[in-house]
Structure formats: C-alpha cells, structure tokens
Image (cartoon, rainbow, N blue to C red; front, side, top):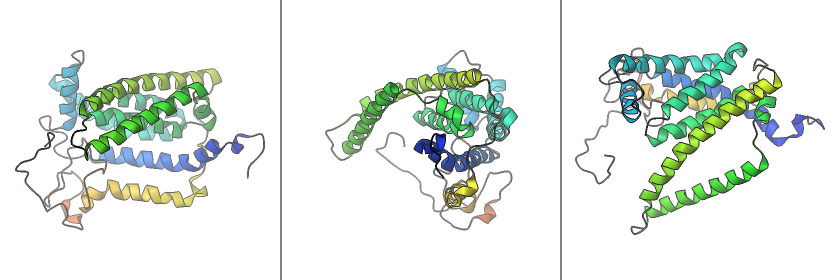
Length: 293
C-alpha cells in the first residue's frame, strides 16, 4: 500500500524496507563465518597467524603502532572478539549505535594494511552498516545532489579505467598497470575521507535528532520470503570449506583455515564431513610468469 505524503511513496525507501531485513541477516552471517573460520590451530599460533602477520606489516608501515609480541597477541584475540561483538551489538537497540561506530573504526584499522582488497572490503562493510539504522536516520545521511552528480562522474571514470584494464589483457601493447597503482592509492585515501565523513554525518544525525538507534528495525523479512534464497546461498558458501566444496570467496580470507588434502586444522569441524574430493586434487606450482605466484 502506497500512502501519499509519506515516505512509502519514495522508491528508495521501499527498496530499503524490502532489502534491509535480509541484508542484516546476511551481514551477521558474514561476521559469523569470519570469526568461526578463525577457530583453528594456526590462527592462534603467533608464528603463523595472519592476524599477527598483518599487525607486523601495519606496524612496520606505521611505526607509531606497537609491534611487540603482546601487541600481536592482542591483534589475534582482539580481532576475533571484535568480529564476534559487532553483529551481537547491532542486533540490540541499546548497543546498536556503539556497534556501528565500533564496526567503522575496526574496518578503518584493517584498511591501514597495504593490501588493496582490505580497504575496498572495509568500504563495503561501512556502507552495509546503514541497514541497521532507522530509515529516517539513513535518509538524513543522504548527500546533496551536487555530491551525487560528482559521484556518478567518478564512478563512470573508474568504470572506464576498469574496462581499459580488461582490454589490456587482450592487447599486448596496452599497459596501464602503473596507472592502476595510482588509482589504488587514490582509492585508499578516498576510503578514509569516506569513513571520516560517514562517521561525522552518522553521529551528527543522531545528535541533531536527539534520538538513539533503539527503534524497531525497518521492514519485515517475512514480507519478501523469496529473498531468503540469498541468505541460504550465503550460508552454504560460508560452510563450503568444511563440505569440501570450495575455499575461494568463502569468507575464510585472513583466517588461517586449512581444509585441503583431506585434513582440517579447525578446532570444531572435522574433515570427515567433506562430501567431495575437490580439495584433494592438489597441484604444485613449478613455474609461472605471474608476479604474485
């Protein structure tokens, strides 16, 4: 039912009410797997833990951050605790504001790592946090039309560079690898500008309205049950390593999880539940012209 003179006549608001309930579920599932995958032997070993390695690399780039063993242990356990706490805090009204702010600050810290995928992942997660705030607060964060126009042009330019990068793989004489490096640096700086503006607008919108984010969630997941298919696929994808299905893009990044060759280092899930042998067909890389390999 569309009521004239209300927010329900706005297409973006209707999309928000439809998609936000399932986005919340999916975001919590993602955080569940990022924490659950880390419950393995290697993650808690300071010599092997990706969290400790990432902390060492960030502290080497930013000498103000401590790099001792105690700081690396803090990175190991702190990451696990925060990734568990964020979705729990987002689910309860009294802690929702703190959960959004904690999530933004946590991903801002992760994005300090020079890996290009981390600041892009952090930017995505920062945007998804808006699904946990009331529709009125989300609407108050909408930038003005001038900013949106500039954003559309920026997106078009970025898309153009991406197409050129794809074409460069087909045309030997066309190489823009150096330009992509510059774009990555610009994207890194843009993310922190985006994060700072987002935090400022978010806190200001709460202060000016004099409200806390304790209202009931906007939308009802039961109103669009077909969207549950995405949540089910996301859960199956996250559980894929334990079923022997896949490890790539299963939210096991930076978790030290190993489920290949019929073995598992996870503290809870045994390797015996794998239903395929797809992760047992291992190869040894002897030579490659790929710099990453």
